[in-house]
Image (cartoon, rainbow, N blue to C red):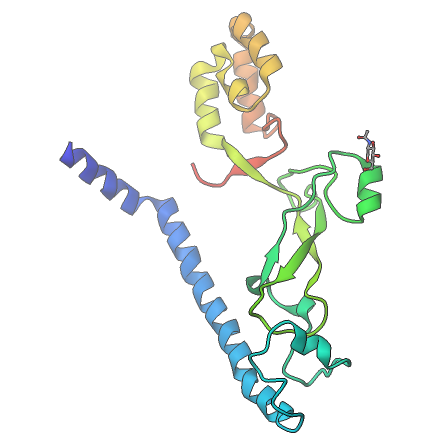
Length: 222
Ligand SMILES: *[C@@H]1O[C@H](CO)[C@@H](O)[C@H](O)[C@H]1NC(C)=O
C-alpha cells in the first residue's frame, strides 16, 4: 500500500499539468511583486505632497483619501481606481441573462450566452469590480471592468468524455455526462442507435459539435 502511495505521489509530482500550474504561478508571482513595489514606490511622493497639507492625509489612509481631494491630479501618487490591474480588484462573475435581451438591456452588462471556442465566438462583457480595502486609489472604488469573456468551466473534460463516448457510447454515457439526459436515454434504449449513433457521437465530439448542455467550456486539464 505504501509503495502504491509512493508511485501515486511520484505521478502527481511529474504530472505535466501540475507543472503547468506551477509554471503559471511562477510567472504571476513577479507581476504582483512588481505592481506591489510600484505602489510602494509612490508612497514617498504622496508623503512629500501631503506634508504641506497637514498630517491628516497620510499615505497609509484608506478609502477616503482619494475622494477627499476633490480634483484628480494626474501626476499625483494615486491612480484612478478603474486603471488598477486585476491583482488589486475583487471582480464578480459575469451575469447570466439566459438569452433574455430585455434583461441585458436593463442591466447594461452581462452575457446572453456562455461558451464558444474561438475569440469571435465568445461574447465579452463588463463585470462589477471592487478595489480591495487596503489599496489606495482615486475615484469610485466600485466600477465596471470591460472585456471579460463569457465563459465558465464546470467538470467537463474533453478526453474523459471522448473515452466514455468510444467505450460506453452504446449506453449513452457520454451524453449522460454532458447533461443531455433526454438524448442519452434514447441512446441507451436503442443501444447507441444500433451502433450508428455511437459512431456519429464520437465524430460530433471530435469536430466540437457535441458540447456540455449547460454551455460551459471544456476544462483545460484532463
Ligand atoms: C427577461 O427579463 C425581464 C427583466 O428582468 C423580465 O421582466 C422578463 O420576464 C424576462 N423574460 C423572460 C422570457 O424570462
